[in-house]
Length: 57
Image (cartoon, rainbow, N blue to C red; front, side, top):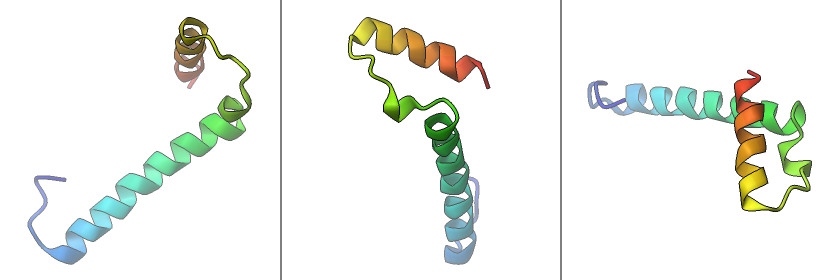
């Protein structure tokens, strides 16, 4: 986004596209992989399961 000319409309469009992609990815992890419903609480297990889930895409 830093390479975009400093035109407000162009920058706003790029920012919305970026966050749209970000939101789709988080929605997929929540709905498909049920990350928010996870009952894993130990830090070690949490990081291991997150890595496994993220590699499945």
